[in-house]
Length: 264
Ligand SMILES: *[C@@H]1O[C@H](CO)[C@@H](O)[C@H](O)[C@H]1NC(C)=O
Ligand SMILES: *[C@@H]1O[C@H](CO)[C@@H](O)[C@H](O)[C@H]1NC(C)=O
Ligand SMILES: *[C@@H]1O[C@H](CO)[C@@H](O)[C@H](O)[C@H]1NC(C)=O
Ligand SMILES: *[C@@H]1O[C@H](CO)[C@@H](O)[C@H](O)[C@H]1NC(C)=O
Ligand SMILES: *[C@@H]1O[C@H](CO)[C@@H](O)[C@H](O)[C@H]1NC(C)=O
Image (cartoon, rainbow, N blue to C red; front, side, top):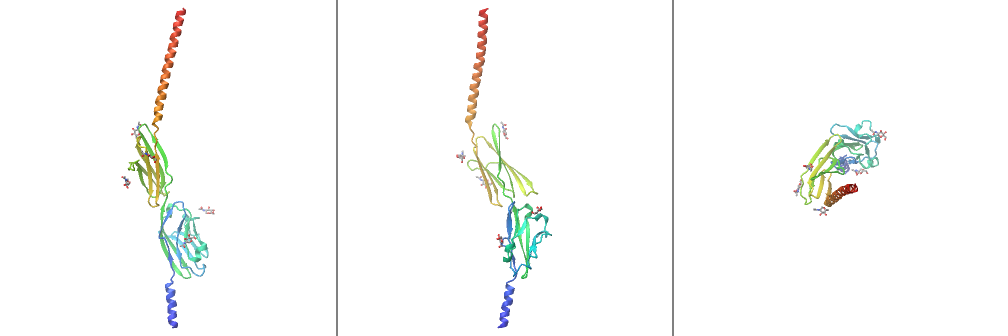
């Protein structure tokens, strides 16, 4: 009976093994925003023996470490300096999640969450993917006598899908320029759609599929043709007035000459 009891206890201990788990193996991190890399472990009776190390899997750079019940950042990679924190009040619950304050392009990659305490040691691997939301597109309009160019400029990551639609939702042809700013983790996008002056409505659409971002900027082009008609009328009236003035001056001059002649 005692043996059976002991066996159950031993089995129990074996089953309740120490575990480190990352609930989200693929995390999408957005430029400039905080990212929380989730990690859970089997919590122990106290924090005195707890050691947590977050490191990059590719090159073992230290992202954050904690032992002797406090952050230990002497060996932290400078790229993560002042940007990382653990949820210290959650540690006793087995929460070793890491917060990165403001995501940068080079934060993308593989992270190891390594935890040990009185109950054991374990590790879990997760991937962080980087994306940047496209900024509000800046609009420019270039006009000449016969055509009109509508241009939008914006930046984000990764490369977007660009669509220009006409007034009957038909695809319009366009020009697309993509500048690669690898260091900044951004693509600078410039897209131009050239339309004949008869076209009135165009819509610029930009999709960042990774981040589910869909920017749609409709444009309503209103050609006030009356203005040119008015201008022509005004010009015509002005010309007639000018001609009349000239005729008047000549007439006056001739009249004066005649008067002078008759007075002689
Ligand atoms: C850990 O704690 C943080 C902060 O309260 C919370 O956002 C996160 O969801 C927790 N993670 C896990 C795995 O419980
Ligand atoms: C980190 O933060 C401290 C205190 O806020 C500051 O003095 C230091 O310059 C910061 N270091 C970096 C690299 O930002
Ligand atoms: C207007 O611009 C288009 C393309 O940029 C060009 O083909 C056309 O000749 C220009 N028209 C005039 C009147 O300058
Ligand atoms: C252009 O768009 C405006 C606003 O949606 C709409 O009222 C108008 O009918 C459109 N014009 C054409 C020719 O589709
Ligand atoms: C316009 O082009 C997109 C892809 O660029 C395509 O998915 C869509 O079906 C096209 N629409 C029309 C009306 O041709």
